[in-house]
Structures are given as structure tokens and as C-alpha cells.
Amino acid sequence: MAREPREGGGRGRDRDRDRDRESGDELIDKLVTINRVAKVVKGGRRFAFAALVVVGDQKGRVGYGAGKAREVPEAIRKATERAKRGMIRVPMKEGRTLHHDVTGSYGAGSVVLRAASAGTGIIAGGPMRAVFESLGIGDVVAKSVGSRNPHNMVKATFAALAACASPRSVANRRGKKVADLLGRRDQHGAATGEEAQANG
Image (cartoon, rainbow, N blue to C red; front, side, top):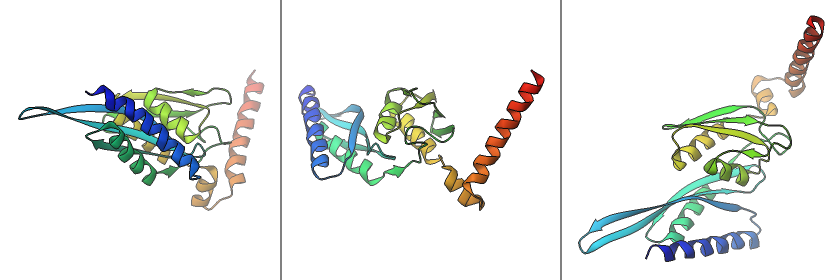
């Protein structure tokens, strides 16, 4: 009884994705998890489904949503709509990785996201991998610390991404130029290298 909606849910998800592409909205959606719950009523059990979906344009915008319904396709549709309404924009370095390391937490879940060099790929668990692939990040190292509940992991990942800042936004907030921030860091790195050579 419960297997038929799952198969239909997959086909419905593909149709929704095709419809988004035809309308010019290049969004991809990834189903993170589906949870089936049963309510015992007079005459038997009544099943319902809860879906967690991540949506992104692979260009720096991503969102997540949860939906509940009596059927799998309807739960996925609700979750996808909520994900589209709550999308956030994340600044990326060179369009492939984060500008800096960041941590995020939600409930008992906590995640650590680290910027990675080109060619590293996405090193992350299932729920976090879905977020990064939808976001369009190509190089990142992520570690989940604490709860492995998919909802907590996704929400903690979004909390970390929301805390990401680009050098331009930091410079504007401090009333400085981007070159001043990056130049100071480069000078510090050069001085450290000179000290190492002198000691060597």
C-alpha cells in the first residue's frame, strides 16, 4: 500500500523539475528524506508522509522546505513550494567554494564547513551534499558533529551558510576597501614566509 505512492512520487518530482525548466526557472530540487508516520484510528491505521526537499539554482541560491500530506507526491510538492519561497543567496569564492570556514548549529545538530582548493570536490554527508549540489558549490569539506537527524543537519547547514560573508560585504560594513583587507592579509602571509626563511 505504501510502496505505490513512493514510485509515483519519483515520477511527480521529475515532472515538477521539467516544468520548472520549461518556465525558464532553472531550479533543481533534491529529495533529502521521506518519513512515513502512522496514526492508529478506529478501523485501522492511517498513513501520512513528511518530505524534506532542497531547491537551488546552482548559482548561489538555495532553500529548503518540509511538507506533510496523505500522499508522497503532495508532500513533496508542498515541501518544494516552501523551499522556493525561503531561498537565500550565499556568496561564493570564484563560483566554486566558500570564502572562509564557518560553523552552524540547530538544535542538537552542528556542522563545520571549510573552504577547499580547486579539485577537492564535495566531501560531505547525504543531507549536506544535497544542499551543496543545489547551491552550486564544487569544492567544500563539511563535517557533521552531533545529531544526524536530516532536518537538524540541513537547518544547521543553512545556519552556517547564512553566516558566510564575502570580502566586499565585510569591507562595506567596516567602511574600508576590499584591497585593504586582502592586502593586509597578503602582507601578513608574506611576512610570515620571510620569517620562516630567515629561521630556516
